[in-house]
Every structure is written in C-alpha cells, then in structure tokens.
Image (cartoon, rainbow, N blue to C red; front, side):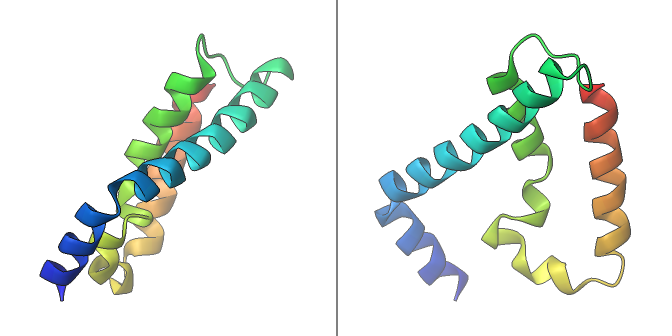
Length: 89
C-alpha cells in the first residue's frame, strides 16, 4: 500500500507542491497577523510558516498516518505545538 502511495505521490508532485504552497501561505498569513498584533516576533513570516509546517509534518503527512493511532500522539502533538508557539514568541 505504501508503495502505491509513493508512486501516486511521485506522479502528482505538482499537485502536492501546490497544496503545500497553499497551506504554508495560510500559515504565513496567520504568523504575519500574529506579528502585527505583537503576539509573534518573526523577521520573515514565510520562513517561519515553512518551519512550523515542517516541524509538524508528523501530524499531517500521510506517510505518517500509521502513527496517528498511537495512544501518545495527542501528547506528542501538544509538545510540538508548544515548542513551535514558543519559538514564534
């Protein structure tokens, strides 16, 4: 099944790249809004957004879907979320 996913992902590279660009664009707007309100201190919202996206990939990348059933996934997410928010502030 993973081999099939990998093949489909390779064939849809442009679609995936566009999707990731849209998601990181949304995150960049959130970070920029937070910075304008004084909630975040970032020099470059686009760079910060991509870093946050990459840091949280375990929780949204389909390649990691098997781990999402792990009983400790919620605690792991909260730890990463706290770390990312601390880095932004």
